[in-house]
Image 1 (cartoon, rainbow, N blue to C red):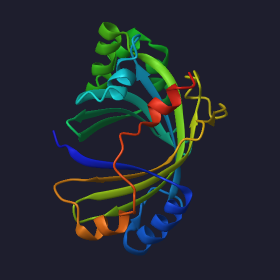
Image 2 (image 1 turned 90 degrees about the vertical axis):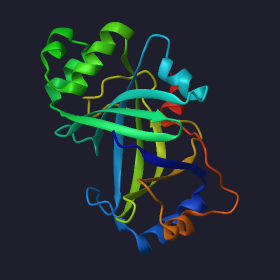
Image 3 (image 1 turned 180 degrees about the vertical axis):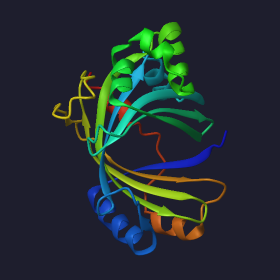
Image 4 (image 1 turned 30 degrees about the vertical axis):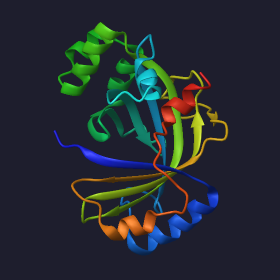
Length: 223
């Protein structure tokens, strides 16, 4: 299991413009984006006690959460993901799902899930059975993404964060979302064993500090 380092910084609009120009001058744009930008849609899962939400708020060192994810609302490519965090290090595993498989996950169709041979689906099925994990809310945002090969660095600028309130109809491409209040813009930096100094210099901003910002937690304030 390979873990990655992760920094998050809350930034303002002016910061974002400065960072976007700096990053574009040195890093490559994400090859899957359109002009370096794409929209992210996620459906997050939690149990009846909102364990994932509460552990995030309480700063628990070891935690995990499940989500469905697609890009630019393209439902031909859906991922089931589990993101784990251990003492500040992150690990993510994913499995591609068909729309029918995603529907089974959303609706909690246990018979279909029990027959699915994908290990991540099996793990989610077990935890749905034993922990009562269910869909909670949709989270959407726009992302500018940049990559840098040394250190396997990925830098993203996330903004326009929106919540589905209590909506869980992830497969509805016309489903409405609303702005998550005055949610901050977020700079995220992820890397493997080392972070090159050139990247440190690019992302450094006066007065900005690392944060434990969670888009899921912000969006759950509204449902």
